[in-house]
Length: 356
Image 1: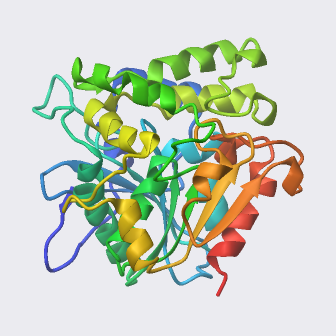
Image 2: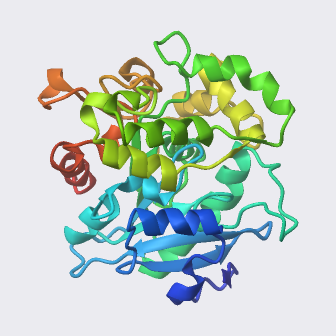
């Protein structure tokens, strides 16, 4: 572990033996079953101001062709493996093979980062602002220190994109440009099925953590035997292989701190998420404008964040689906791990990053 300090970070890749130090036996078994090979990536552990160990996975390029490092941030109840379509194909590795210096983070309670458990004193008591004001500063500082750069590009999926909007509302000068994938600050009065989560938000007071991952895992398990079991709320069943979907649900889903769900419900209902000062994030963006360009990407068949919700924000918008030249309609997670995402989506995102 390498704590943050005013003098910067001095970090070395953690040995493979410690890469999975915060994983349970079941999580390790899942990685082995799906043959997840991360041997070509480096793992760094950093410490937040409130003393959580967070993991940042580095995909170094053979030849760096783009000056700014790329930070990938997963969505709600997910982790860095949300960017893996299959064990042999990942968005991070794709970008690295094209000369980008890539880093993928795991927020607190997710992936390789520390999680609440029987062997520690950590608890599921954090909300969205802990991600935004504690995790993100530590992660971005680490990425900039490791890359020896002053700015990075940010790609956030779902809630990861909402975190990017938060950084934009705070005029964070460390971000050069960013991409949101299936993200919005206001899902109200659209076809988003997130309204079902908003309705259930009061129930989250019962438990500190909400096991939203179980429904996904059941769907993923059944999809190995019948593709019709793929949950359309998570991906368009026609646009994702049962292999990729099952792997995602088993290796990249987690329980969610209930406070986070209650915070996100404010975006779902349109009431509006707020920053540390109590100012609505969407209003700040509207009043101050965007300090850096943001491409708001959506899938034509995304039941979580339909295009009409995604297009409310960003400086540019892009939709993937048949009407826009792709072979199939895109849902929420198939923007990252769909059958042809590596041919239809990933190159477009890479091209936009280098756009001047």
